[in-house]
Every structure is written in C-alpha cells, then in structure tokens.
Image (tube, rainbow, N blue to C red; front, side):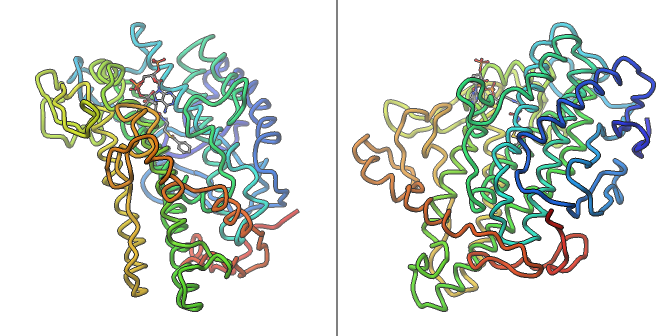
Length: 472
Ligand code: BYC
C-alpha cells in the first residue's frame, strides 16, 4: 500500500490491483461498461478538453494535479486513504476491537446495502446534470460542472471496487446494476428520491451541490467511522474530493445573490425578472425545495436500521471519536421534534433510535453557515431581506413529518391552507420557466451571464479569464 497512485495500470489505483489478477480482470471487464454509461448518460456538451484536477496521491499535501484533459480520457481509478494499522472500532458492541479488513458474514447484507445506496447516488447525479453544459454561465462554471461530474464518476468507481473486492458474485451483479438504474427512469429509477429529481438549470445545480452534496459529506462522514476498514478509507478520500463540490454550491449561490442585489440597485426594484435576474424570493423558494428534499435523504428521524448499523459498527455518528459519551448509547435517550396528536411537539426517544435525527441535526447546523454568508451579501448591499432555512418539517416525504403540512416557519397547516400558500414557498412552474429562460450559454473567455456575478478567484490560481474549457 502506498500513498502515491500507480498511473501505469489501466485502472489507476493505490490498492496494488496488479497483485490480484482476478479482481483486476473483473474491474477491467466493468471498465468498458462504465465508459459506455459515461458516453450515453454523461455530459451531453461536446468538448475537446477541460482543465481538471486528477488525484495523484492520497496524502495530506498536494494530492491533486491540474491539466487540460479530454473528458472520456479522465483517469478514473481506485484511491483509498492510507491504512492506520492501529485503528480500532470506535463504537457499538465491538468497540475497542480491531477494525475489519474483510466483511464479517453476519453483516454482509447490511454493508452491501449501504455501499449500493451510496454508489447509486454518484452516477445518478451525473445523469441529473448531464445537460447543464449546454447552458453554462461561463467557462469557469462549465469547468466546475465537469470537475464535479468526473469525481462523482470516480466515487462510483470507489463503491464498485468495494463491491468487486469484498462481495463476490452478488457484489459484481450490484456493480452492473449501478449502471442500469437511471435517474428519473420509470422502470428502474435511482434508489433515493432526491436523485430522481431533475437538475434542469444552474440555480438548481448550485442548490444541489450546496444541499444534496452536503448530505453526501455527512453520510460519507458516518461511513468513514465504519468498522469495515476498506469502506472507511475509501470514504475518507472521497470526502477530500467532496469539499470542492460544496464550494461550487456555496459560492454559486453567493454569486447569484450578489448579482440579484446589483440588479435591484441598478433598476431600483425588487422585480428584477424583467431585467434578467433572479428575484430573492425565488432564490428562497429554491432553498426551501432543495433543503427539504435533502432532509429526506437522512431517512426517518427514528430508525431501527440506523440503530442496528450503529450497534453492529457499520455506520457511526458524525465525528464519532470526538463525542464525549460511551459510544454504545444503549442507556441514553434524547428529545426530538415530532408530530404528536397533530401538533408539533417534542418526544423522548432512545438515542440509538434517533441516529438519523442526530446526523440530520449536524447537517442542518452546517447548512446554516451558507445562509449566514449569503445574508452577509444582502446586508452589505443595505437590504433588509434575509434568506432562511425552512422548518425541518416543511415539505417532507420521508420520516416523522411525512404527510403533515408544515409551513416554512413551522406552523401546522390544513391541506387547504397549504394549497393556498404553496406557490409562495416552493418554485412555481412560472418561476422555473423564468429561471430556465435565463439559461443561455456563455462560452466566451472571461465573459459571464447576466444573472450571476463572476467568482472572486479562478481555479488553482488561474484567473477567471483562463480558458478552462476548449469546446469541440
Ligand atoms: N428515499 O430506517 P429508515 C451523496 C427507505 S448523498 C427512498 O428510515 P435508514 C451524493 C430505507 O431504504 C449520500 N427510500 O432509513 C450527493 C428503508 O428501506 P427498507 C448517499 C428511503 O435505513 C450528491 C426504509 O425507507 N449515501 O453521496 O436508517 C451527489 C426505512 O428506512 C429513503 C447514503 O445515503 C429515501 N430518501 O436510512 C452525489 C449512505 N430514506 O430497509 C452523491 C447510505 C429511507 O425498509 N445509506 N428510505 O427496505 C444509508 O445510510 C441509509 O440507507 C439511508 C436511510 C440514510 C439512506
């Protein structure tokens, strides 16, 4: 095992793939299927090359190399963080024992399921975003889109490696199935709801990378704690790549808000749609939608699945090792908000059952940081308007709030009240049509669409005007 990555292999890797002929052959057989999937379901815009970062090592310093690369020639591979020989299981019934280098028989089905669910989201997001290249607001943004896409493709490789290396025949079948399900497909949709929604425009893309990729960060953070060491090490390296995706979301929304304030000032009105901008209340509606859809990805607030995963050592909590408790949680309870007799109230539940709620709570606090940042832009522009995260029960379809009608400010509504207000809380067909109408591509170097401000800086020290993408 080494820190650096072997690029002489057909499949770049740091897991000594060449020493395991069977595994190498199996992955080499999957590779053409992946490339076919990329050609059919990946980005639709034809490009000659894109200024991309590629992983060259997994250590802390300088792991990435930047260069112009033709997208289909991107070196997708298998990269795991370095092994810590002394690592022990940090939680659950086996706390303190050595971590597992192989899958224990009794946890095989559960681990495989977690890996398949994680793996399924990665290609799904590429499918959701495939047409966005046709309407990029600048070459800089276009490059970021493709960077996110190739890395989601690599994250699929990460999960497929685990399935092939540790789950035998069934794992190989699951790896094949990951390329057969498709986002939004009637017959074989992606597993989780949010990954079957469209990402039809760039505002949605920034919201997705802010809110939905952030679910990825938190789920990967819990799998990084796993007693199954190869899964832990895989997720650790994926998290490094993930940081850029969320940067794209945070700064993307930042730039839209900034541009909207400029247009408001310039035209002395909040109604900036006729001036080619996105009104602040529409940005708020997009936040409401993407936040609520992403909360559903945490599963139900009370979950026996989550309790079992934890007790077995498969999936920990966010920053498990920094928590100051017994890491077994059998005797603890905690308060969670829930619907009780038709009213919002709190309920005491065993901590073990509330682990999805625990993770969701960490996630919400993190989401708040972006809102604060965007509100700073509004404040600096001298505006009173503030963006907010809606109540956690708003627009939920999974968990304890599913089926209830709760307003963004947390009032329980009747069906009729909800129907009469929904258009002011969630993007309407008119809002979407307007946002869509702004999505005209700007492929000229150093130029940017009217609805978004340029970034403060470029990628890897390059200026905004840099030729990040050469079109075909
Ligand atoms: N949609 O006990 P429950 C990312 C099912 S994003 C449909 O409430 P549990 C990325 C559930 O399967 C991160 N079904 O939930 C982001 C279960 O079914 P069974 C992806 C759902 O199991 C952007 C039943 O309902 N990674 O990486 O504790 C771009 C009851 O389940 C949903 C992961 O999610 C849903 N939303 O937790 C690219 C990590 N929610 O067993 C990438 C792996 C629940 O009754 N997955 N169900 O048939 C997990 O940890 C868990 O499976 C979940 C659900 C958190 C998803």
